[in-house]
Amino acid sequence: MKNKGCVIAGGIGVFLLIVLLGVGLWMKNAYNNFVNLQQNVSSKWSNVETVYQKRANLIPNLERAVKSYSNFEKSTLTDIIEARSKATSINIDPTNMTEADMAKFQATQGQLSGALSRLMAVVESYPNLKADQQYINFQREYTAIENSIRTETVYFNDAAKQYNVTIQQFPSNILAGLFHFMPKPYFQAEAGAEKAPEVFK
Image (cartoon, rainbow, N blue to C red):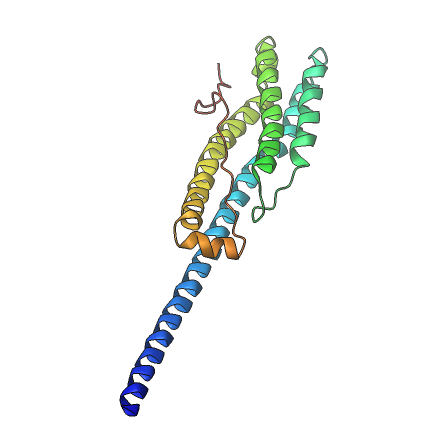
């Protein structure tokens, strides 16, 4: 009887050890998956920031083109320069980003988009400026960058969705909560963002 009890106890011990090893392996794999998905989100966010920075870097070219026309409405250009300054001052840590961070980032970028749109509308009244090679070059680069912005924000949202779904599914959500893996906010499309910028007329 004693030997039988030892065998049973040993069997239970082996079973518990296998279960613990299985749980440990699952936790390791799940944690590493969270890290990989989070790194993917960070990488995609870096691409979003890069294309927005490229757009901001275009502003001096636009400024040079417009300043050569002395009668151009300077307040419109001033609005763009101020909006650019605000837009480039916001930095987000993608590992700890919140909806408030994202809303602030998008608001400042939206202000710059609005200022650029207003300037392009004003340029319609200046045929010589519209035909200026510097301005034409700006238009081409601006259109390409705006298309890249739409593409990169879609990629970011896809990565954020994959990460969010993974950390919120049971039982992964328990481990994610234990190690403070928080959901990522999505990039919200602006009204009319599905249309390419109409800069050539």
